[in-house]
Length: 180
Image (cartoon, rainbow, N blue to C red):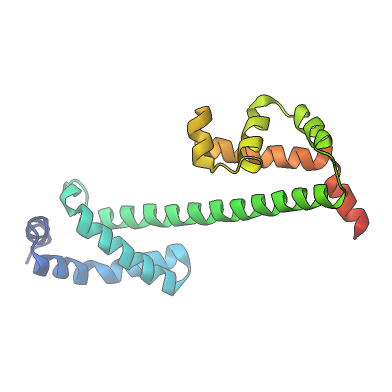
């Protein structure tokens, strides 16, 4: 059966048409994803994820491009999303490690809150407010984003740079290197 007919039937919910489309396109998609990911297991997992997305989104396929091109677009976007999430997770872990280090440094040095306030006062409002909301009050990046009307990514960046500046201002990094 021709691919166009299979797609038409799949859009109407024909499971056999979906199965035929998958059989025809799955090997091609896996080979493409192996080249992208450089990891066979990840490629197969991503191909399966892409095929499940196709089931949800088949009605959005308009036929302007080849079906295989549409699959590649979905798979590529899915891969980019996964990589972006991994990067955000690494940034978050690094941010939390910086925060724990800052907190430990303050507690171990018996710093007074006034010293912290002095360091915070050096930060400009656009950085100080997100740092306080995140690390003093414990709000999530999304909550802070809603509160101050900035994208969550901007909030994360400001918190990160604010913590780095606080560490420098309070000379926490210097004390750790001299202690080692």
